[in-house]
Image 1 (spheres, rainbow, N blue to C red):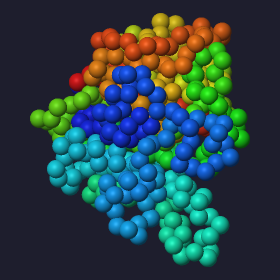
Image 2: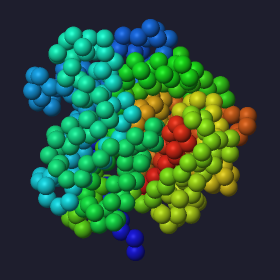
Image 3: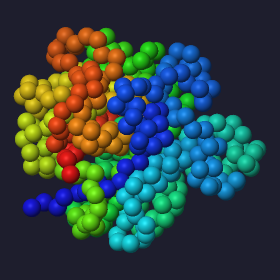
Length: 396
């Protein structure tokens, strides 16, 4: 029998709240965290909506007990908060016990600080400390240091599928016997660069995003961090597994730098592979946590892929991005946490703001919290460059 990958800990900080418990409460009450941009000065502040974490940097610095002259960026702070919660729930008292790794995903990295201090790097020594925290690997190393992990550590950056790929890599390393347990997930802060970048691509909505809706007009950006503790069967012995990561798949449709193909080929292949590794038929999937960005291209492409993989017998599906905004590299981990919560609560979370079916596919997502016995949840994360990943979570 294939080795089971147990999930023994969860940690998250998002626009819904600063813990798993507060995120779950918001999901169960269908309460969105998307609102006005408040913590970044932007010319677009009055015309876009975002999913912003309530904590300020100063508040997180205090909670993490950082020295005064540190160079942690917001990405690292968010990641530290979520990763520590995951490890605590997994009841890991000695992080050095067993072969423990850390795989973190990010796209923003430290640019929330470097973009702020760019013009004064040459003249202000205080600003120069953020040069070394700009690159993607810096937040990973800082979070690993907070956790006390000195073994295998690496960073994944594959756009919006980054955290899903971090989870997949962690599972493969456990199955290969390289690690006994691994903390996996991702973190991204909001920044002017990403706001302006998505604005230039005409992908930002000025209203609450409406995934899979006929009149969808773009996404809401968000910031978040989420991590899961994966453990081998041996390492998890005696623990209460929250769920199992039973399948995973990654594929690329090689279609376009930012757009998905009309046939959803990459998404289809990723889901197909995830189901094969899980050893289950598509009919065994009870709920799909869709990528669902609310952009015209993604939602149509994903809908076609869902029709293909499920042969038009699509289970209940929804996008949870109207709750948190699209959290970029963190999205796959945020939605992995939500998938585990769905299994635990036996429910499908609503696709907020939906009003009308897309004429091309006539699919309707779950629009209200729906209670149902769940055994397997499929979670999709699709990134720029056609990098598509799917994960299957199964009830413990």
